[in-house]
Structure formats: structure tokens, C-alpha cells
Length: 162
Image (cartoon, rainbow, N blue to C red; front, side):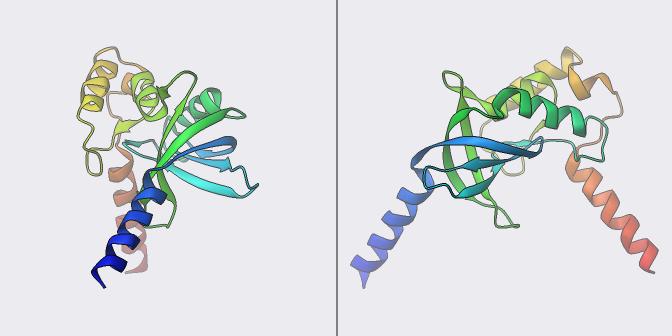
């Protein structure tokens, strides 16, 4: 039984952390893309370490456009690091000679370091620098983090039901 558990754990880690090459065929929003795999299957990838404004939020469309300008139609390398609550694959995506997409989004000011789910503390410094330079969403002194925006939307919806 121990051998079976060990084997299943090993297979899971190989699945989650293996390097995959794919072509990005769609951009859903600033932090979600669709990859076309070698077997012609499509996989929705939620970017690790970053949270971009929602499409209906200020700078949401800008974040989507930035992500599109970086990876749409390109072959990328990604690593699966888990699944989110919507069962999307959470992934670290690399492109153009090892640029890390999540870091590039944060550096350009189109996303927050997603500290709630990330242990990559270097991205905190990247965010601070973008903030100091007032890049992208940081040009808005009242920028609302997407997790706060979603929470406010949910609260407003619940108040309507009451």
C-alpha cells in the first residue's frame, strides 16, 4: 500500500511540475489564457503569482491587452503548479527567452502580486517599483485590488437579495 501511495504521489508531482510547450490561442482576461497542447487539446491556464483587474474593472481591458501583446499566438513553456477553485490549471508561463509572464504583468503595472497564493516575494518588490513609477493601474491612486472588487460585488449582490 505504501508503494502505491508513493507511486501516485510521484506521478502527481510529475504531472504538476513537468515542463510543457504549447501555443497560446486565446486570452480570457489579464491572468487567464488558453493553451493549445501538442495533442490538439486546449487547456485554460490561470497565471500563478498575479491577480489582474477584472474585465469590468478599471484597467481590466488594459491588462487583457497587455497579456495578449506578450503571448497571444506564441509558443510558450509552462509548468502546472495546481488547480484553482474553478478547476483551472494554475501555471507559471515563460516566453521570449525565459520571461516570466506574471512578473512582466506586475512590472508593467497591470496586475497585483497575488500574495494570498504566492510565495514569490521577489514579485512584491516588482510591484512596489511599478507603484513608485505609477505604471498602468498605479496611475490611479484609488486602484482597487481584484479580490476586494470581487468581494464588494458579492456583498452588493447579497444586499440586493435581502
